[in-house]
Length: 391
Image 1: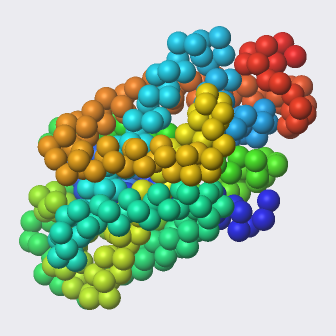
Image 2: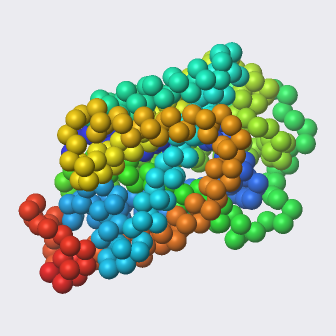
Image 3: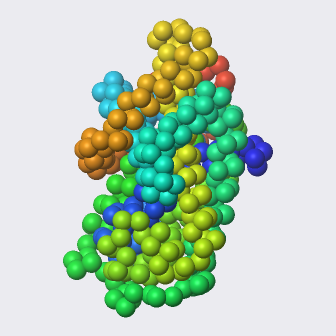
């Protein structure tokens, strides 16, 4: 597997997860700092390691048993229980991806009004049109776009947060900053619970890794690609926390903590301009990655159920429908209602995705190792447990 192929695969998932909540820093306050205080970077790091372990298990199952798409991987994991578990898994995946579309659209609306001074609908339409265009052009085109956006975001993240760590242009640090601040009643359970919500709730992004499943020929391909993704993840979900915890508890009261850091404390104009670019790329990369993933699932659904071969209908119809439903949701009060459900989806993801993957997945890989199978023969018809256990 060529390095560029690995970079493309890692870029798609990185861009999808780095949405508006993380690019603005709000997610760090809600899920990590409010529960873990100054220990937040370490809690996030542990969660990120477990998160990528899950990706490794999922990708290795897909590679070894030649199962395209997340639905095939979880069909193997569930085995005989797939009749009951598969519908709930599909709902969890698709609803989580739909929430990501809403996040991208709502973020696009805020970007247009608060940063560019444009009408709200303008930001939504820009993200929607570009995302559907990328989905129509296909996975390879998406991989190229995702790679370019990921590299830019990675460089900007490093530039902003390393500058902040070094205190470039730093001034006016608030007087109520508390070193090693912790919440009044710190709880190891709450720390772990919130981290699990974040990372288990993001397991549907396995579907984005699996867009390129056929390129993973060896275990080294899987591990080295995930290694690139992990480095991207450190820049987006661990490094920012090392900066933001230095402002606890003062920063807890800000809706966009990263903008506060740049404009009120660092006052380093180049970093502020770079942040605006980062935010737009984060929104576009999330929107395009999720829409492409929904499009690929739609292709398989339409092809299997309705035997439709028209490229537009296969690639763009379902994403277009999803976007048209998402527009009013992202502009109205229903947005908050749907995001209130995100916590429940996190719980369901732990039960339906994380636990089966982390418990049953290694068993499937163990059986493959025991029989000396690195990849099943290409023509093999895998029927859940019958092949995995009995063959």
